[in-house]
Image (cartoon, rainbow, N blue to C red):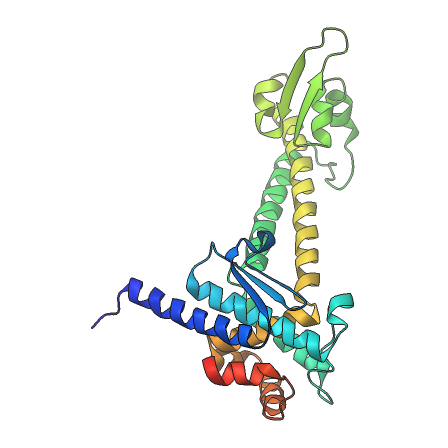
Length: 278
């Protein structure tokens, strides 16, 4: 008999509620009817919030993630100051190797695939920049996209298009008449019909370079976030619930050390939680 989606959701609901009851029995405050401060989940001291706006399967994963933060903070109080360390969790182990494996686990667990989407977007923008660069160089072989190109800038800076060299959208107010005009990189052809294709492409390439810089910044911040010890450990435990066999393949060394320390009760209440629900 094929299990109905509603039946599966009911099963997830029952599991989630049982997990919540277990955490509350430990003295934790667990809120399940909030937006979790704009996130899917949130942990602070003895309080865990789980967003009410996500499916029960995801609620389970987020609850595991946030509870792991709680356990980590009990083992290592520096979690609240500098995102903790992996050393107290894996004493006498090869931390560099564990970090490397856990980062691979993180990319597997990340349900939103934020990192992958950003990299795909980055590659698309790079291809577009290279294509525009090639088109400009067909007429202006000395053009270099990394530097201001005087032949174009001289023409552009005599018009309101000069603002689009720095911004994607602008609202320009005339000094005497008090009128305003809105300009966008997407409307260059319409707003500045006097420009030839190369000048238009020059403005577009500047806009795409700004986009590329923003994407690079987001990737950098995401990498820094993912590499926080407390996030690595939380996603590792979350991953064990999602697919233990897969995690043991992705992170064989970290998995073996974790199992050893779990048997030694290194992870406090997490041991009973795993035994009850994993």
